Amino acid sequence: MAGSKYVILGGGMAAGYAAKELAERGLKSGELCIVSSDDALPYERPPLSKGFLAGKENEAGILINKPEWYAERGIEVRLRTVAESIDAAGKRLRTNSGETFAFEELLIATGARARKLDCPGAELANIFYLRSMDDSRAIREAASTAKQAVVIGGGFIGMEVASVLAQQKIETTMVIQEDRVWSRVFTPEMSAFFERYYAARGVRIRKQQRVAEIRGKERVAAVVLGGGEPLGCDMVVAGIGVVPVTNLAGRAGLAVENGIVVDEFLATSHPGISAAGDVANYTDTIFGKRRRVEHWDNAVSQGQHWSARVTGDRKPFAHVPYFFSDVFDLSYELWGDASGATQVVTRGDMHSPSFSVWWLKREQVVSAFVMSRPEEEREAAQEWIRSGQSVSAERLQDQKRPVNDAASSAHARGSRP
Image 1 (tube, rainbow, N blue to C red):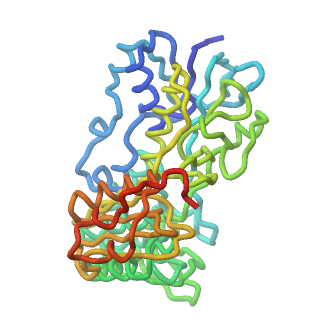
Image 2 (cartoon, rainbow, N blue to C red):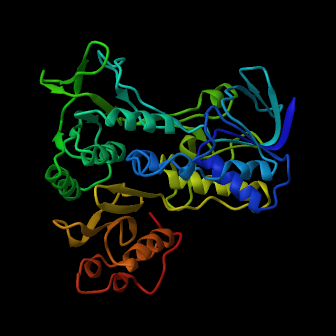
Image 3 (cartoon, rainbow, N blue to C red):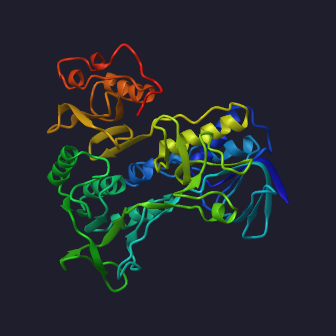
């Protein structure tokens, strides 16, 4: 039986950055083992729908740590290794080959799997989902010869993939069930801006449509919408959400509810077992609610936080949810949680690619979107959300005032509704 002080189950970004943090905190040779079903070392996930997908980055360039980095620090990485069970009480992890790993501290970072299409023809070739490097590589290969593509889903994966495909001169159509793109996050005005931007670059957007069927003999030839209209295509990419991978945790007796339930320290109810990344349903100490986040920044920060905690730095995980995206020649950032906001303020011109959107709840900024704006807006967005700063909506929407003029002199940390 193998054994390590620390074992990380999963080889994604949480694992890569947790290992990096442990190494910086004095990790000794032989103290860490990463057990991953993946065939690649931990790598950055954002490029999969951006630079790597577009062929601008290669596999070596997106690795979090170089291959020799692990060996030099005595970190064991077991790739292509599938975990079969977790003995929470005995602190053991068993693989499907029968090998057992003992641990003092286990971090479950199993991530999430892509939701699959559930319609006739969903098993045809050239239908893709995007979660891994292999997925991105397969989409890139299909795109090299494709003439027409259908992207199903209007969230950030659908928007980023459609952008890459359209820039490769592929006739691209987005099919979304909602009445506008990324309606879960964007305001109607924001959705309208991006819809205009995509249309001007050749992307067709079919809204309030469901996929009834996918036709083809061996590979996809058309996506048929609910009304019977066929959309001819050589390839399909579906970005319709993900499901956290919790089967092992559930069988081990850990609490599972929309992910693995952890506290503000990312710890489960079983001593020595924690969870991080897409799979963790954690206590958000900033917003006072439970949350599961499927973005790269959360995985990075939670992996680092776990490493800090198990090496003696015990403090709650306090982190403002963060997301960034690159589409066509646009780059934007998004912070916070807009649910429950009572007022929305915009700065800049929403008919131009330079504007910011601020969601407020009782004079506190709870979320902010910033695209091609002055640096002080980026800085204010993060600080105001983190601190619970009181902000005047009237002053914030005054375009002639610097953004910081909207903040009151007194902070309101801890008073977030």
